[in-house]
Length: 103
Image (tube, rainbow, N blue to C red):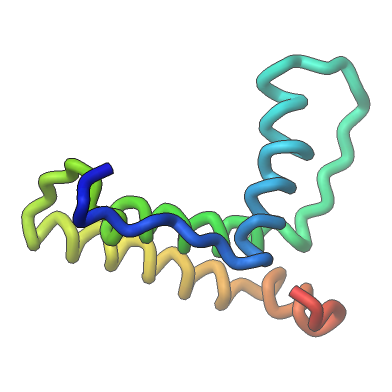
């Protein structure tokens, strides 16, 4: 980190999304644990949205030794924003929030 770097401060929802992604999906796949899999997809879009918010911050705001041009920064920002809008517009996301207003 440099003196200009911003620390990453995660929201409760972002922490929960990263924890779910790591412990429920990543670790069992990475450290192969034989099991029968059933993956509930209703929360996956919300997990992806929270993780994309963290990725955007790390890519564009943390200011650690990253040398992006203005055009590259705009492109990354637009990709993340467009992906979030796309995920939020999906019927599965709307259905999830119709049944669960806590996330």
